Amino acid sequence: MVLTVVLLLFLQSISQIASDSSPSSFSFNSGFNSSNLYLDGFAQIQPNGILTLNHPLHEGLYGLAHAFYPTPFLFHNSSLNSSSLSSFSTHFIFQINPDPGPRLCLGGMAFVISPTPQLPLSGTADLLGLFNDSTLGDPSNRIFAVELDTGQDSRFNDIDANHVGIDINTPRSTTAAARGYLGLRSGRAMHLWIDYKRDAYFTVVVYLAPLGVEKPDESESLLAKQLDLSNILNGNMYVGFSAASCGDSTNILGWSFAINGVAHELSISRIPRLPREPSRFWLYFGPGLAGVLAIIPLILVTIFYVGRKIIYSEVRLKVGN
Image (cartoon, rainbow, N blue to C red; front, side, top):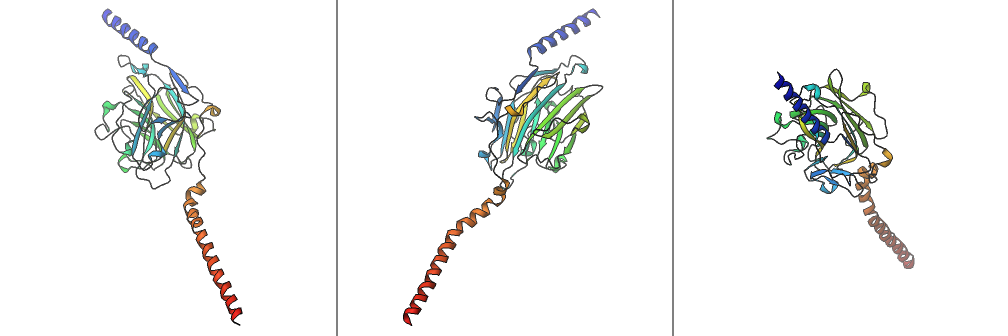
């Protein structure tokens, strides 16, 4: 009995030491230039500080991208009971700018918590860069994700091509909600909040709003799901983003995260500015107008040539008379 108590105290002290040495929060409000994020695939940080997961320069190419905070967080120690599982809070501002050309594959992005930042760089785009065929559905993945899915895949029972879902070890969401008028590929900047609350039950709550709109009340949350993640968020875990695309540009403008607390607010006035989007009028009608403008000189030359012939023929007719 005494030995058991001593062992329990020892494990608790080890857990406390690990907890003290791991971070508790971070916030990137003015860009990611000094973030030291772990990046792979097509992920890159633009000169203005925007974190880009897929870029228009890769238009027409299938690509995966990952970006993770470089230091892991201790969410839970399996030697203790599930009540030791940490709560967390995160929110980020994102924008998905659609490829104006024909869509070559499904895709989207996800906020992800994983035991490793080195997720597969193989696998189809509908797996969102989280899995490949050999890891799909494997419980040893221990991956929690909130997906922003811009494709509808029947094999995962996707509700539509514009939805947010909560995933555990597979893109087959435990729960999902359609976005309706808030098109994820609209090119508009949006704000997503994720809270893992530890009240009477463990609950994941997800909120989504256009940029500039305050966080909705919990009664107006997009998703709320009771989930005990103690078997998933076990030990040191990395937090970050994963994306897959065939040409869409996926941008993160600001990101804040906290464990056992509330993530810092993001000031909209301080986030990096996106390049001005071309008007959708030009996106849809620009090619046609360019074609019309291209033939206008030909029409003018033709009118001038025909007009000259008519004038000269009238002059010759008068001279002949």
